[in-house]
Length: 88
Image 1 (cartoon, rainbow, N blue to C red):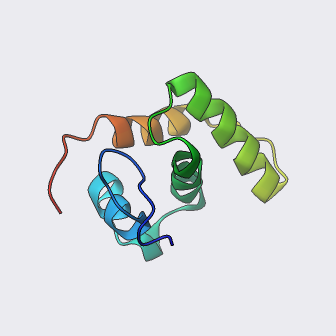
Image 2 (tube, rainbow, N blue to C red; image 1 turned 90 degrees about the vertical axis):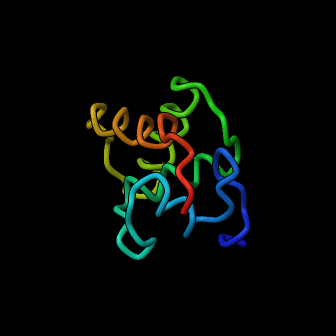
Image 3 (cartoon, helix red, strand yellow; image 1 turned 60 degrees about the vertical axis):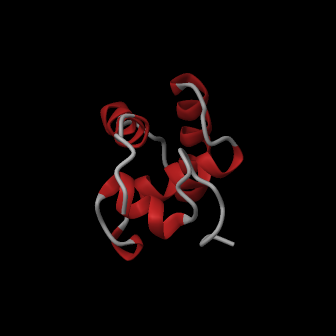
């Protein structure tokens, strides 16, 4: 399923999305980057507000820690939504 689920902008599956948006193999994604893909499974085109609320909720659920790095959250969102549709 993770190889086929649409993530954003016609990126099908986590492996392709990982290469397209973070320029790395899926095995090397950070927890923070992985959580972003889980958020996008439910809604592949959220506003930043919707994305950040769901992201923080999921991150805190997984780690049992308070999420505090909002600059990282913005960086992840921008990496996904400002990508220029590069072909991988």
